[in-house]
Image 1 (tube, rainbow, N blue to C red):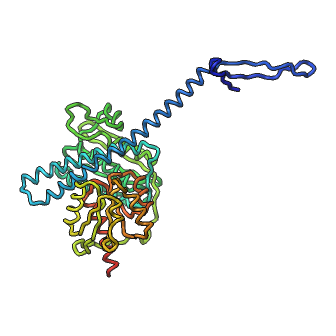
Image 2: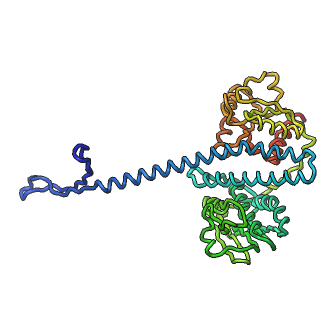
Image 3: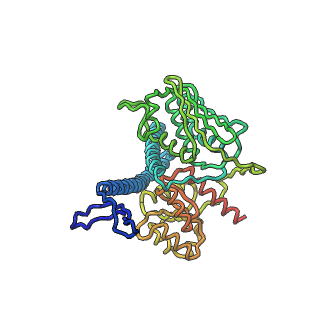
Length: 430
């Protein structure tokens, strides 16, 4: 039994233990036992609980702060990237075009750093989840190699990939996260290789998938390898370091691989090269008559859209209007969700899709979408926001939004989404 004395008697915690005491005739004479002062132990336990609560609160506050900062930085960065894209197509001379390209690369690097910091925060949190589905591993490999091939060519490096014949065509996995791990590892290999080659080799055993990324780069010393997977640490940690970056890529990759119940191993020798091997549990899918050829789409001949953009930032309104009109679409602007609801029914019926910002004054995008769906409006609504966490996206779909475009707006992603609804309208008119 544990008991605490009243505060006016000292508030001590006492641990009591005892047994009944009987005489020879079996009559109870009383109890005998011990009383132990456990106040110190109780205080230690309470301090540990308090410290744990404080740590959990601090971690939650950190995640919320990073998510907020990501949103606040992404919003103006959307304008920077969008206007740079438009400026690049405005008939500049070669020298001016070179300046624009350098500015765009710097802005893209800033976006990568923001994504890395936010990713690390999300992955370390208990709310992070993988989204597994049937995927073609070759799609992940092709995507990464295609994106990084130009970077390799600029350095005179040969980038190649090979998938062994016994690897299943389809597996169960999170396509985006597997691609992210490959992008980090292959991107690092190219960054730290000055001549020779970088290769991706995929093989499997009965229950494991192996992704091997090899390079002929500068290699990593045994001392540096001990720090390699720690956040914000780099093998080249000197103040005059030659290679840039946040030092988060490998830490994020290791977190993701662990979440996927896999492992990552490194073999490296200075001035010879490195080999990262990722092993993942293999969950294959039987493939039977699932191959379908996706017909090529001639976007130029698809119908142009009448698009409503709900966005409160004048600069981002301009960016969206320029990007959409450049592609031949007609654009109407609303400054908030309430203005969307106030549009005349005759004008509203002529709209094809809505690009809906989430954080807006007067009425936000989620509230506006709810109201539109409750009023029976079936028009496609696409979330256009700097809030890019998966939980945010699920919330958008739950209120009736149909798709999602992250800020800063990437031209290729915008084209893909628009083409989807252009083809839908074309099929309705045919």
